[in-house]
Image (cartoon, rainbow, N blue to C red):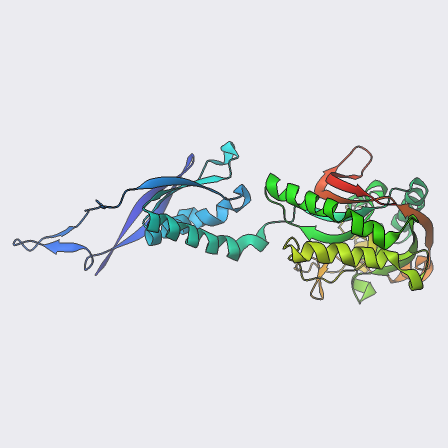
Length: 353
């Protein structure tokens, strides 16, 4: 027979009321009176000790689980005391108290939870080749304004990438601690000599143009981008060789866990629903929402949100060229963090020839 009960779990400043089960057939003693009492003997001959484990606080919620259920399970299975800091402390340290075996078991179980949920944590950084040429930025801004007025009136202004933040993405990074950020920056800097060998003494100049959509069906476009090619031509494609080298180097070190292949491009527009436009315009330009995965496109799926019919835009403006520009540096850029000029903030960079 199993009896239900509740226990209170304290996690930082929060308390969680969790249902537990007490099995009458386990750890029970029956006296002469026939009454059953639960054996609460907990003394252990082995000396107990405490240790701090560094777990990025972005992962703490997965260790806690819904209403503390995962944390309760980890405690029960390991027999260790596990203390998670309050959110306001902004601490990454989780305290584990128990015997050597209990602490080892707790760490093993926590590692399993982290491994299962790590990909649920958003990316924090990306490897970026920023397009800093003011003339090109101005041309792209003019195109975006034209596209907004003539073809994409229902797309929110936030869907048009700020000209100051235009860049080529070589890989998405999940750097959850300052140490990981430092490791990524240091790795980039150690690649400097080989990057210079690939590029030689000439500046890396690229041409940007020829619009396309990330989706094969242009009537349900989520991302409109411009192709980027080495100005020196296919016979001397230093841009491709540089991008592949850097991405593969980070991949080998375990920094990149995304499945998407490298695609050298500059995103100009991400479809987001605007508030303007009539009902007829909305019906003509915007498709139904689709729940998807990834940052732009992953495993052939389109991002969640609304899509637009980019056919008319591509028919009239698809052949546009925005000219050429020099790529001057490669960065470990921060997602969602911008300077006053619109450029992404970065934690480290390497200058190119």
